[in-house]
Length: 287
Image (cartoon, rainbow, N blue to C red; front, side, top):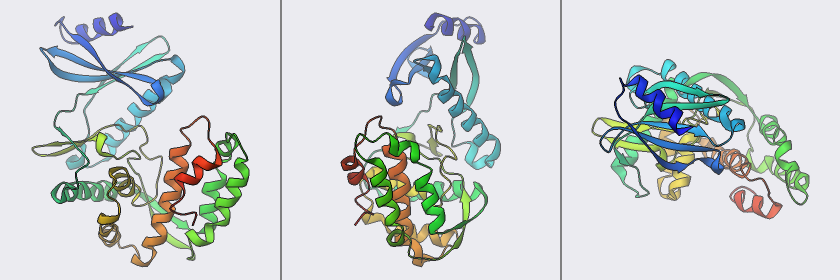
């Protein structure tokens, strides 16, 4: 496969010698990531190749997500996404090719200036990603839980007991009536490892989960939770709700909703799970 990729890339670059360097394996080793070098050690592009033909759809999905985002976002945001190059198809394998993003990787330090830039990007991105409105209520939340039936089936113990337990807590999670909220396309995996800072702003990579979650503020929640400084930056939710003219009184409940959705997404990556593992992920809301 590597020789085929090299030959294809050389054809595109007028026979210039190139080198492929394996960077890392992807989620659950479903794909491999290579840096494409054509000028010394300077990375020119990043390629993702599936480890098995069956995983090809994941790479195609991410490629299509990124292409869709670049086609729909305004120019000032398009520049914060990596450029796309023509993909390579080998048999049943779809190999994506995109810009090798350069810059300073984000880290876990609680830097206020950095957070301001991150918050500004999220608000601009979400404002451009509004695709409609939803009527959010307890029944809507219960529907989200019940749609995860296949996930609860994978519990090694009584997953449906835990599902019923989560449903029973809906009144505590959402003690409000029906409310109209914007439907907003989210990045879906917005954490420090997918953000790079450059002189003129930032670049955001890994668009595999784009538009998978449509709930307001999910990207902000995801970023702060993964950075492990959620509590001290809680004020950013007030700023976010103010930016989108959302009622501030629902913020505590909305954060619990996001904990629930994030937990369902996070734990569903595991092939084997127990109620105890799920309890740990949902401890912020199952109290």
